[in-house]
Amino acid sequence: MGNLIKVLTRDIDNNAGNFFLDFENAQPSEPERELWEQVSVVLKDGREILDDLQSYDGAGEVIREVGGGRRGGHPAPQQEGLQEKSWGAVVPLVGMLKKFYEFSMRLEATLRDLLAFAEILHFTLRFDELKMTNPAIQNDFSYYRRTLSRMRIKNVPAVGENEVNNELANRMSLFYAEATPMLKTLSDATLKFVSENKDLPLENTTDCLSTMASVCKVMLETPEYRSRFASEETASFCLRVMVGVIILYDYVNPAGAFVKSSKIDMKGCIKVLRDQPPNSVEGLLNALRYTTKHLNDETTSKQIKSMLQ
Image (cartoon, rainbow, N blue to C red; front, side, top):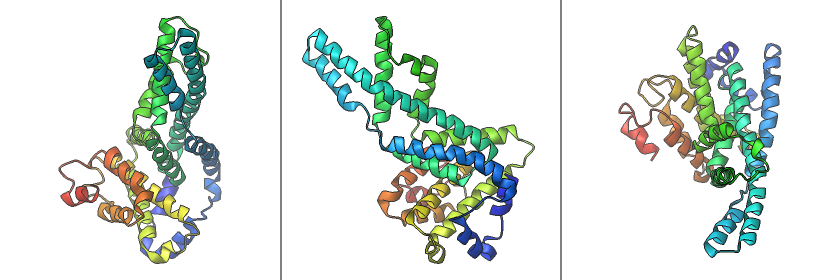
C-alpha cells in the first residue's frame, strides 16, 4: 500500500510522459514481485470466471417448460419428467454461481494485501457489467431455491443439494441480489480495511484512490496520452479503474466523492465517461448512479446529478 501511494502521488504533470508510457506494460519491481505473483494467480482465475459468466445462458427455457406444463395440466409422469429435466439443467448452473461467489471471497482476501489494485478493479467492474445484463442468473438461482424447498417438504432426495447448502444459499442470494455484487464485496472490504487500521491516516487511502482516478482521467482525456494506447481495451481498462476508485473513495471518505471538497474531479470524470461511445460506458454510468453512497446527498451539486441523469 505504501509503495503504491508513493508511485501514484508523484507529480503527474512533471512525470506524465514516462508514467503513461509505462502504464500499459507496467511490471512489478523486485520488492513488489511476491505480492504481484499472489494477485496474478487470482486474476488468472478471474479471466476464467469472466469467460464462464459471458457464456452463461441460464435455464430459462426449461424452467418455462415446467411452468407451462403446470398450467397446461400435463399428466403426472410427464410433469415429473419436465421437473427432472429442469432440475438437471439448473443444478450445474448453481454450481457455477457458487464458483463466482467463492471467487468474490478470494478477491476480498487479495484486496487486504493490495487495496485498490487496478487489475482487481478492472475485473470487478467487468464482472458486474456482465452480471447486470444477465437476468438469468437470479432467475436460475431463485428457481433452484424454490424447487429445493418443495423437494424438502416432500422428502424427495435432491441430487446436487450438497453443492449449495441452505446457509450458503442464503449468502449467495444476498450476493446476487446486489446490482454490482463484486464491487459491493470490494467496498465492504475497503471499509473493513479502514476500520481495522485506524492507526493509518485515512488520507493515505483517499489520496491513493483520488490519485488513481486523476491519472486515469488525464490519460483518457488527453489526446497525446490516449494515442499511445496499443488498443481500445486499455481505454476500457482505465475507464473501469477510474469508476472503481471513485466508488471506493465515495464509501471510504465520510463526505463522499461528490462533495465540493472531494479530491476527485467528479465533473471531469463524468465528462470523460460521457465522451465515450454510449453503449460502451452505460454500465459504468449505472455503477455511479446506483452503487455509490453519496450521490443523492444534499451536498452533491445539481450539475453533477444532472450529468448522471
